[in-house]
Length: 135
Length: 131
Image (cartoon, rainbow over all chains, first blue to last red; front, side):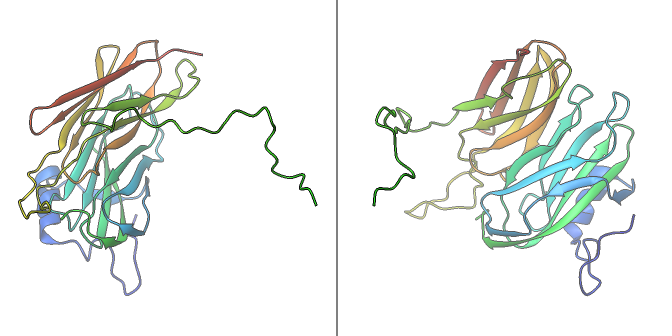
């Protein structure tokens, strides 16, 4: 699936900064990260960057042999880019992960789901931030 | 003209709001399970911890930096078996909240353990019962 595009033909891949590229390279090596299947629910406008709710889910069937082993939550322009990693097991079952994150400024937020089979699915949403929540 | 709407019955109990006896302190934790859980259903578990989650970038009123103080590891145990593990940084909001799925395969306690970067360990557990 192609990367989602915004107006002006600029999408999450075009705006990816080098720090994010290096982090993805360090975490996943040369494995392909595809867009799709991740349902990422986060407000596009966050007046208060101190607490932005984020819900990650996947629309693939979850079975004991095929499940999400980890969700990675990344904010491009935060001091800590990968700010949360959620490791799940086959005992977890199918359902969303919800949390609240801090954001320093307007940037893409990426949710990456790693299946136990090694597939990587992701979604990226640009969140416009008012108040800096990171200091 | 007497209104027939929004009249409070005479025998209604007084509206009171339960205030905590003391302000929340670091380490107070809550786990919320659904009211009724069926066997083998996947349930949402909500866990909330009271913690400042300081990033280390802010300064206090007198200009001194506030050192980083945040939860960096969370483990979820279900009947003594680890079912989920979260790695956090200071990018998670103050009073960190998380909701995660869990397959209710048996009646067993659900325990969540939070560890912070200053060595603090906080834990809370609830008994999962089928109803």
